[in-house]
Image 1: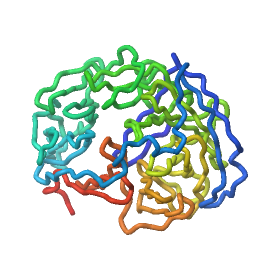
Image 2: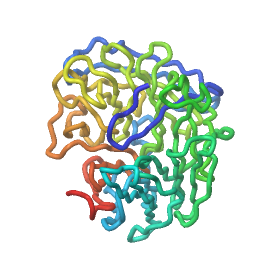
Image 3: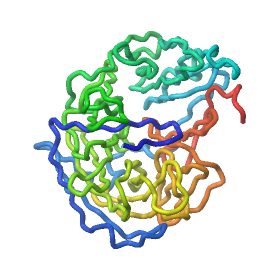
Image 4: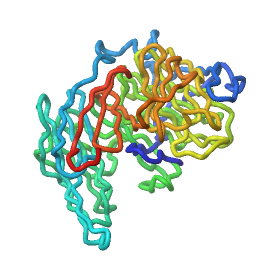
Length: 433
């Protein structure tokens, strides 16, 4: 199973076999009838909607934005900057009310004797409604220069967060959970306990290895979806999941309309497919994408819901042209909330974009942006054609506040409508411009 290379994304993939819904995916066409050159369009696919008894996972009748709360795609929120924070910020997590957490690493090293180096770790917190970020004690230990920084933070709602200490191996592995804005932390067992029928508000959807149990992701034969609870920071298996092969990839956060998305493969054809839940993970509907002709299986699909369309970027090795990191095979669009899909862009050997860092950024009226490895690109016709942007590539991910774009320095940008962005900086004083 291939993973994203570069950027700050670190998604893992999963599958639950127990309580799985039997989902059949259909398609109105083979997806093979369209052109194979860059920008080829016309392919379409459709999904058969299924779900738990007595429930429906079908999208709303008016498309992706029909059920979004008013103001969901409005002006971007304003987050205060904190350039004087020590070290370098990483693993930023935000809550819907604008509060947030950021891990900081302040490292001292000597290139001649790296074993003598060390890193102090801090937590920066912005409380609900606060005008500034403050430092609070980190539960993480000081690390040596050769160990590096491997901790990761998950924001679980206002004042709640989980730190996963990736530098500690079982059986002594521990996570750290706070419910009071980082004033106190308590150790949490990282093992999954029990099941949950739904994904609670503030939770994060992620994965773990189901076979072999506890296996390393790169050697995992089958994975399952798990929910990180905002109540106690514990992991619980999601009771009902879509059938998307052995390695589906969940989006960690819901989209603005409240939908949850998981990508994987159609078990019948092996082609790329996506599933959506509109009832907090209680039921799912699966649709197969009209993928371009290609040899070998794809990696995963990145989904982003915009004001008037849903975009799905299919990732995987490209045929022909210069090899690239994070290759994007195709870009698909749905105008009915994921019920049917049209392939808008087929990646060729030369025409750009050929890569994607994180998520596509959808806007109104057919606008969509792609952050590539070396540059960004914008389309005003739903992804049929692209023009290069002045700024370089940026990694983009979903947060409860909107889409967060992260550059290689200390700068962050937020958007809700894909057009307007608000910028803030963390730990910038010791960073090169």
